[in-house]
Picture 1 (cartoon, rainbow, N blue to C red):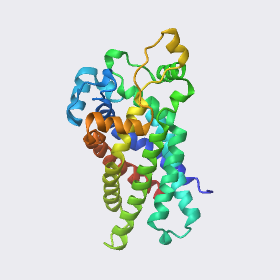
Picture 2 (picture 1 turned 60 degrees about the horizontal axis):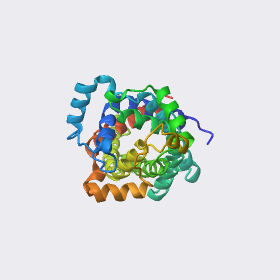
Picture 3 (picture 1 turned 45 degrees about the vertical axis):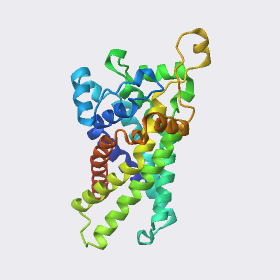
Picture 4 (picture 1 turned 135 degrees about the vertical axis):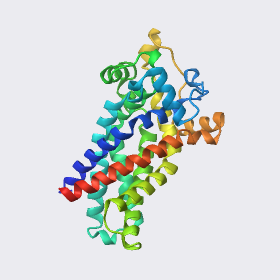
Length: 297
């Protein structure tokens, strides 16, 4: 891993893509946490879809609410994107020095490893992002620092790694699908359709990769979001009566089962439209910027 460029380019492109699509991610989070019968606070179906959520959040809470959690999101991408892309391309280079010898299983394996490593390390920033996106204006909007201190005081260090299992599972799925899908699509476009290694080729390959990623990742993303948004307080706080215990999912499997049992299988695709709408532009911005950085530098 002597080449540092995939790490740097991956981080820069990830931050740019996150900045351009963040309001859509906020609507996705709100759609995914609503309708939970296990939690009275989130039982109400407040948003009918992505557009309705965008309009209602903006009308009731203002433009700032659509960007709530942007700071931890950018911190997450600067860490996660840097590690994920750097590990993926560096690991591929070690296993298969000649790009023409790459195979789908090798690319998937490298993507899964890169996704898991990056997501585990950056999980605290993901927890902060989800909590800040899910909070309502009438509940008192917290800053990044306030949210971090609150989680640490009430839930301890484990609270910062809440949902790390479904997060790693989602990252493994997304990275293990999108990165190989992009490489394969670009290869097919260049070698079978004889297209040049141009921005239009990068656009088509990244669009296809985003669609495939949304289909595979949405159910895991729903579970991940709900696991991260729930609170498990320290025993000392519960004993002192400082907080009220809320029902929680015991594990990601329990969350999956309870979601399907109480809301039906369709609930696993809550937020699919904003997930797809976000992953499409996100991947287009990311891969096109990444490819241009490779050419320039």
